[in-house]
Length: 303
Ligand SMILES: CC(=O)N[C@@H]([C@@H](O)[C@H](O)[C@H](O)CO)[C@@H](O)CC(=O)C(=O)O
Image 1 (cartoon, helix red, strand yellow):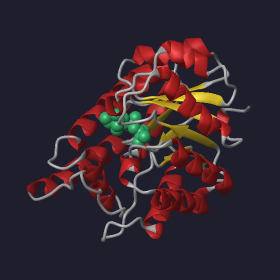
Image 2: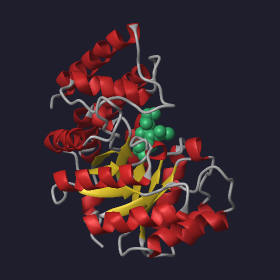
Image 3: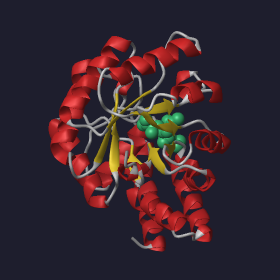
Image 4: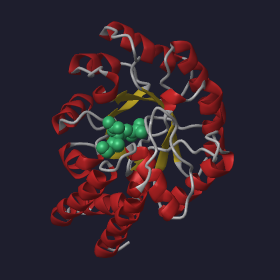
């Protein structure tokens, strides 16, 4: 399979709500078009940044549909279908296939701590429910399940597994997964704070929750890495990290800060759904300062 369409900057897509907190078709499509115009390679739809665990099946299907209607054929589309039960994940997977998505992906099962055998069975049942390729999602910080090299090796025996989105913090995990899987496989860098290091140690591409807040900077970081300009890659990563730290420093959840920031950048996707908390009061004014940090970094590196 030609994996080139998965290589590049792939923002983790946000949940787009109207002012009453319902999934909004118009705002979903606006965000798609905004990111397409910025030049990203694809979208990872309905993952952590998509607030997947706070949405019901119909809402998740609606988002998958609106995104496909807006940018299918223009961007690589990966559907995150991880859900509390295998049954729901399979329903989402089949729907994503109908809509023409390029690949599926899923977190491991959540809530109950299950053994590797159950996790592998869960992912395999999703894979076998469609003809689409599959991308494993390893995010131990939120799921409590850390994908071992042994389980990984077992999973990649299935040729439907074309990649892993690795959000664990040790960059060495990326190196180990790449070494085990080889060239004909995509390792996606997960931690945006380590985009440059992840790419240098073996990641082929990146999917991240802060990319959509500053796509220009991630695209530029990728340009520096792929052209071998590591001095500038290091510099831009430092500026990206200052921005991520600022995004995490306000009183609401980071996704809420990002959504307020996006409003200032011209695209309104509403706010977050509880229990995530919105940014409030004085802190709302600080979002403007973060926007200025992004604007200045864009000017500095030129895009
Ligand atoms: C633990 C976590 O949430 N990791 C994020 C990062 O992109 C993260 O938001 C970023 O590195 C800032 O900490 C992504 O890996 C998640 C992601 O891409 C998604 O929305 O599914």
